[in-house]
Length: 352
Image 1 (cartoon, rainbow, N blue to C red):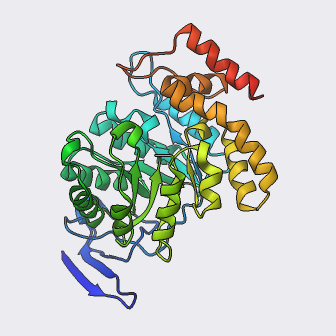
Image 2: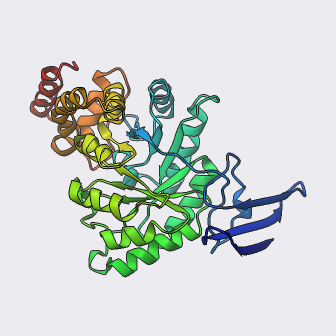
Image 3: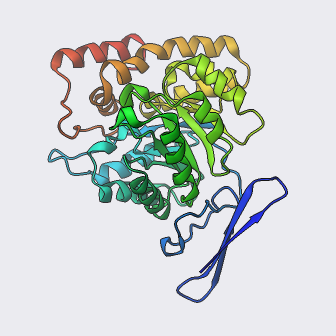
C-alpha cells in the first residue's frame, strides 16, 4: 500500500492512497469528503487524511436518535427498525446515531458500531438521508479507532464530542491536537461537538476557527446556546467550507438567521415535522410564521431536554406512536408526578 501526499491548487493538502483490495483491484481516494463507496477498513492507515470526492451538504434537521432498549436493557433492534421507518418519512436531512440522547456513554464499543450498521440497514435503500455517528471517546486513539469502525459500518460523517474526564488538562492545545489527529485519520468528515452542559468543556472560538481550516473538519454542533458565540463562529469561519448547527430547537431560528445551516435537535425525534417546518420558514424568510412556531416549540423543547431529559424524551416518543422504552441504568424513569407535568406541556402546546 502506498500513501501519496500532493499539494493541490487550493493550497489545501490532499492525500491519495493507492492499494489493492482482496480481488486485486486498485483503489484510490482523495480530497476532503467521503465518496458513496466506503473503502474497507483494511485500507485505512494511521496518519492519513480523509478521502472523498464530493462536498457533504448538511443543511437541514437531524434528530439525535435515542437508543431503544428492551426491559432487560438490551438493545431493541426491532424497535430501532420501526423508529427509523417513521423518521425516514419525515423531511430530515439525516439521522444522528449516538448523540447525547443516544445514551452512548452506556454502550459497549461493539454496541456503538452495531447501532450505526443497523441504522444504515434499516434506512430504505433509496433514502438519501445522511447518517452522522457520534464517535467521541475519552482518548484520541480510541476516538480514531471508533471513527474508522463507524465509517465502515455506514456513517457518512462522525460527530466528535470533546473529551472531558480530565477537565483540567483539556486546554486549547490538547483539544486542538485531539481533533486534528482524529480528522487526519478519519475516512469520513468530522463534525466538532461542543456540549458544555454534559462535558463542562466549552470548545473555544479560537480553537474552532483554527480547526475549521482542516480539510476534513466540516462543521460543528454547538449546543452551548450562546448565540453570540455561534455568531462569532460563523463570522470567523466565513469563506471556509465549515457548517454550523444549532444543538437545540430552542435557538434554531436564531442560528439559521445568522448563517447556520440547520440543527441537531432532540425535539425533532417527536415533533420532526414541526422542527423541519421551522427550518424551512426561516430559510424562506417567512419571519412572522417562523417566530410564532419557534415560540410554540420552546416549552416542549425544554421539557424533553433540560427539564426531563432522556427519560422525558422517551416517554413522549411512546405517546407519539414511536418506541421510547426504558433508559439504561443508572438513568431512572420519570415519576408519576414528572410524567403528568411533561404531558401537560405537550397538551398545552397542542401536540397531544
